[in-house]
Image (tube, rainbow, N blue to C red):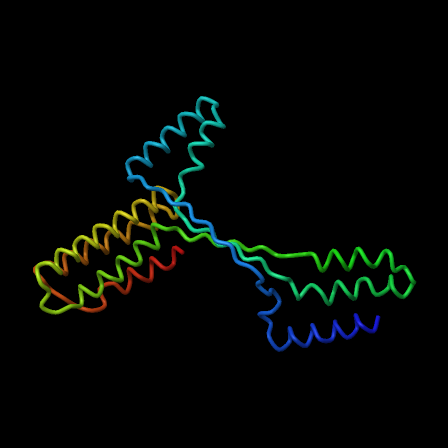
Length: 212
């Protein structure tokens, strides 16, 4: 009881000083699922899966759909320190009654409990973000060379294509992506003829980051 009392006091003090320690990360695992296909190919696969479902071929559709992902899945395993004080207090009455054998598994269950949180990062959005960052630097460059202008156009087209892939894979709705495509078209127009400027990408970057 003295050991548990001291532990509870220390835990509550730690959590009061740093509430973020309510969940203490102990391991992080990352799995990447990448899809090397065109937007048209993905659309065809989705259409085929729908036809399979209509025909009642659920497992065949499931197998087909399981490959339609392009993402990084980050799983973080944490120790839930915030749950320990209450767990210790809950078994204290058992110890007071001398029911040690009942208290042991209850305490062990609390100590063995882990929390796993998962974050999914869509790769098409991530790639588009990096491409637009590179394009922004070129768009701000005064007196761009013809090669720079060509590269800028290629980056904007590639970023737009990645957004189309993200949309068809369901990492957002058409309503989410329509403004992004429109803004890329507007940037192309602004940058035509070698023109340069700042702030062209601000709204686009904000809306894109909101999709993550």
